Image (cartoon, rainbow, N blue to C red):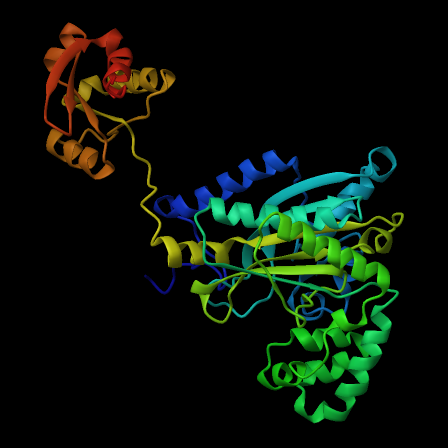
Length: 428
């Protein structure tokens, strides 16, 4: 590649036509499950007011402190490329006054997100999420539904080597007691913590449990989990959630160190991991966020949701299912034109085939018949239509099956119907 040629930015990817097979499977199965579970498709802008994520995601999170792509706007407000989907969904819910019309809503979304990550395999600066937000119910059964939905999507995509981790981090009524206990214990061991976690002691001490630093991880392993400090209401919610998972035969592990990295979570949190990914093995994360709607200016409204990391999930699919098969376009018919003067009529034939629902391609450069046949072979087209001077004069087409070499003729006008008959599976 020439030094003058412009390259893609670090942490971004090009998705070429041959590499879409696993991705298409994941998106197709996700959309199918969303329809079964009654979630409506939601699209929100890629750019949002920066304040949405400062208030919604949390100003003490790594996302807001270190990872957001933000620019000033002409109107004086900051603009941020969305780093996650939940605040945008809640903003749309409030902006459309759904809390006044039909408070209970179930959304799903899929699209690109942006964070200033250190680029590495499966962790990009432009990445993609598939997520859901169920807004307007505090039922622990809804917590179980969202987790079950995530598991069903991943299973439908072909993944079986999944680990489901769950925890409860309490609510504003019981969490302060737990936070105080963590601070008391950690202040005696600040020398073992990283710089970020020393700063978190006062601002968001629960994040120490989520830190990946080896020293912090070791210290966190000796701390009590939030489950020991739950109030009666949170404990009852947790019991009903676990019972629902058990009834649905969802195997899961209770992880007292699981807190997730976002400020808005309350009560239930969960992650789904895949054993084929090594250290960074989380492919889905979610939980309950009962205070976010109120934080963004709405009435108290309970919510729960999750986000599947598309890039991590695709790596898991490759690890378990093998490389994605080639998904390059494979036209059913390739029209080979032997006469340059006949290109226009061949173009009309290609159009007629497509109108009849038959994928078709042709050569536009009037190359030799041999070169055109080579291209048909590379594309994997099962049929070729051979159009020479005789076919043009008699308004016929010569059909060739690439599988066995069989050839037969048909009237030009009957070409699309004849190809459709040839493509029909044999009757039993």
